[in-house]
Length: 249
Image 1 (spheres, rainbow, N blue to C red):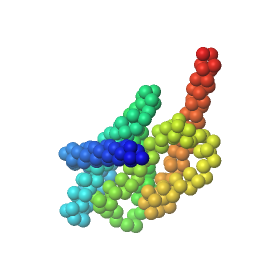
Image 2: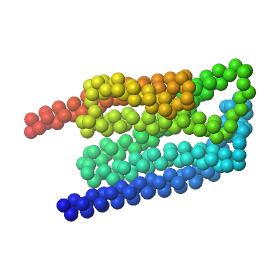
Image 3: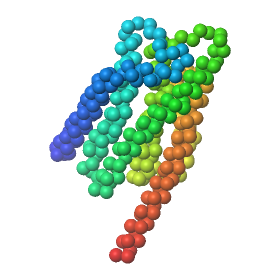
Image 4: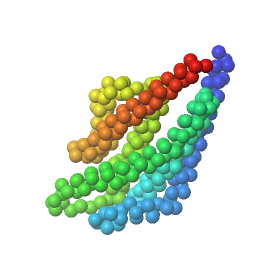
């Protein structure tokens, strides 16, 4: 009993050390990004019809926006590092083949995260923004404040960076037998409801933004079902091949 308790404490301490390492990398990346944050800011606002200057309501707003941009950029560095730390934590319990397979997930996680950010920034964010501005029709004078503009952008873009990781999670859970395509199809109604709620929570408080945020999530779920089906079929083929080899031997 004492040995199990000591082993549990050691695992907890190791997990804590790796979480601290992830936090340090995030802070260091954020600090590094602050040197380039002005260039990022100018690039992010260059398509605005009102020009590249946004209104601020106080001096602290400039600082908060710069830290917001630096923090989001630092996540792109931190996410694969966090995945690598998680892999190192679970690696001792895996076989050599499982280590190679799970290690290959890390670059995929990075690419999917970047792809989610690009999708959110290039597709979701401009469509929501242009539609909401189109509702004005000259009735109101549009004034963008820096903090609200970038918080709106972050809420529209950043969630897709994490949501695009769902295919990797689905592949992993399918390989270890927790998920199957049949189970995901049976869960479709519940999943749709949850994803719509997530889309409503993440999007600005208006009906059109809710739709524009929820529909991609539903499509992403269907992609995950297809990914699970492909993974499951490959898993079945591998199992059959292994059984045939055992019978021949």
